Length: 448
Image (cartoon, rainbow, N blue to C red):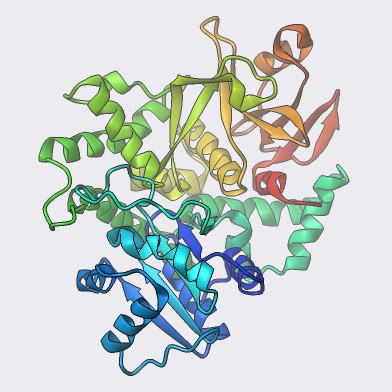
């Protein structure tokens, strides 16, 4: 059973390009990169040459010599004598490509040669110095990069049998600022609650689709998170030696474990000094590991919520959100999941619902920030939407928006802003404030 993903269309569009660069798909482990690429390959090519450098490190030796295409193809033909490597009919797929930097470097020659379609994928490509002792540069300008996430709510709906027409009809209520009929509203509220509980890891989603059992899906998430944490200590250098010392692995794990603690606090700002042991630089390196491995994302505070947002970033202050809402649930534990599903959630509800709004915005490809001042003025998120600074208030149910209204009343201090309230609402628009239900957040990243 293959779960339809948004990368499917991107890969088809990539294949149909003329004079294209090799594709590079990056994202957190277990988000479905390999499955989607192989599904695409098997449906669109006569054959596939698949090299996984993690499972088979010996494959790297085929790139120790000259990196011209003819030499590489000759080496691969000897290694895989039963696969006919044909120009334009064979897809060459380098999986876990971070384990073989020279394979990635060969992208430049593959593009200039033009005879073969090549895709690489990896989860740790952003980690500086990952392969210690290897100074191989990245092929800047010779790769077409796709950032893949775990499944978003729209993909979750596809997996559960919803059609593009049904989803487009839902989006049209948003575009037209029309109230969603109560019966439809309740259906999507229920589906979104299931999405919060199951999350977006494809294996967990598939389990839920096949069994309709949230607890079975949650156990898969728990196993995935456990593997994720033990994976921190498995990174190797080019000679097969551990990349990180035990103390470094411990710091990374400590950062991971602290995420739910800070998300449960009022301002949710992550405080690096609370990490156990190590210098300030070492603590920040541990945070950066999770960020560059796509396991957790930094959401920076702004000096001012005015455009350009990236020009107003305060890099010393940030919130840290896991890459998938299911990770938040796994960190809080099964009791929280049960309470969430039954509508009896206590103090954790703010952390979970703010996290799921971030989850939806991030997977929509939107750059997300927040705004907070020592005076107590605080806005959950700030994004650029329709070429304007847009304040986002993420509510569990409903609530006041005192801080946002203060900012909007003083454009002379904060610039021109608009406001979207996301919570237990239907669609509404009054006094230049748009309210939408949680389940519609993904639409903010869609084109009309």
